[in-house]
Image (cartoon, rainbow, N blue to C red; front, side, top):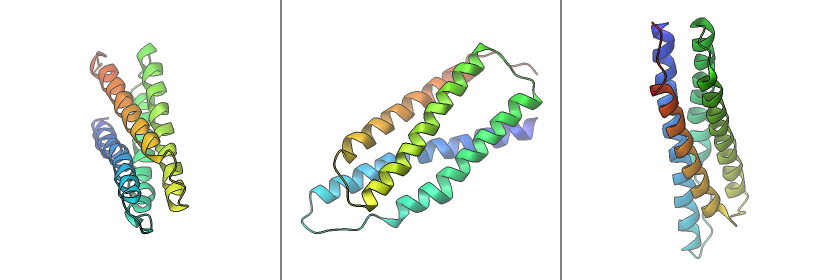
Length: 140
């Protein structure tokens, strides 16, 4: 059970970091494009970060979290709220992927606002998850 908790926390920290960094990179790229007069291709790092780092960590965090509450037989109303917040984080993750595709296709309209909104929403959802988990009494 301890290893599952460790895996879940470690992968969740990595996923949350990537989920905050992706919109920041999108914002930086969208702003640098609007200030420039020549066409610059979307950085490869965005797609690499999304497909090879953020998505595997997201999947591992979700799988280890699922295993954690199945093995630990954890249940309660707080868990439903936490899973709802995690579902919102998954939606932010998917929307980051959609914005990366839009950036690659040079459809930059609304990219700055969408990236900022995703970053703020993801941060708020992470805070909700943290508060729910830390305010819940754990059973040994």
